[in-house]
Image (cartoon, rainbow, N blue to C red):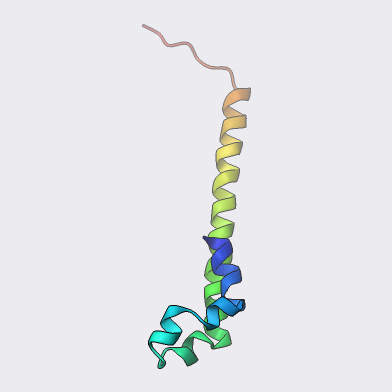
Amino acid sequence: MGLLLAALPWTAFWQHNYFAQAMPALRPILLNDFARGAVTGLGLINLYVGLVDVAFLVGGAVQSRSEPREKATE
């Protein structure tokens, strides 16, 4: 999703989307470079958070494999 949000505002699809055609009053806002930049920024934040999350998952899996397990006491 982050990759789509980062790249989509700068493609031709963004100019010819449903909302821009259905509501002509929204068209200047959607085509504004600041709005496109805001959507791209959200996409980049989404990508960053996802990569950090994957890094924690991979790092936790590697760390749990390297530490010896404690035996359960009954």
